[in-house]
Length: 259
Image 1 (cartoon, helix red, strand yellow):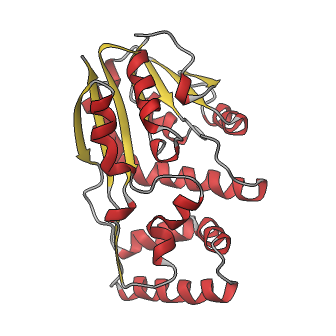
Image 2 (cartoon, helix red, strand yellow):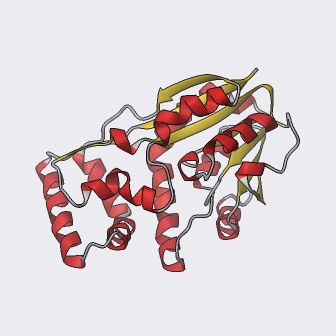
């Protein structure tokens, strides 16, 4: 789906996507192995965005990857990120994929269904274009309803626990819906928890510093003043320095086999 961000926000969003790709790499790689990416001849990456995750998909296969996004500016970024790799980039709508039935060995998406206007239609389309016996994969989809955070900070926690996602038109609870979406698409379905390791405070701090501008802009968009954000940041960084901060944010995967 379109990223729905202003030009001013777009740069920080691209940086955030790159950071997310690096931070979730160890969680996605076992899913790629389960899905058989290595032996697939033709893979479809739906909602490729900046191409940061597509880069890993391409590195895990000896085949060809077709990467699709419906935002022209994202596709242009992806072309630069994926230059020279075994990837072809197209602009198209995930709700109506521009491919014949039974074309791909694997169709995959990452952190995409939460933004889809009609996620069931997207999964149905992914199932349609995959060959019999092929795989449909949602490598990671979050569920903000299962987010655990301590110490609490009222007024900010709610924003990062799904409020800002809903305001952008996303579904913060998509993770728990993956089994339903895949089963209703006629797929033999396996679901699992992608992230099982809880970061230490140093890792949390490094992640925050990398994406600080992004978080500030989210909070400002939600109506917080600079002073309120500074107070929150001071408390957050203090809890990290003390080593007491706890964050767990569940992200689920689904692998469906076309029967």
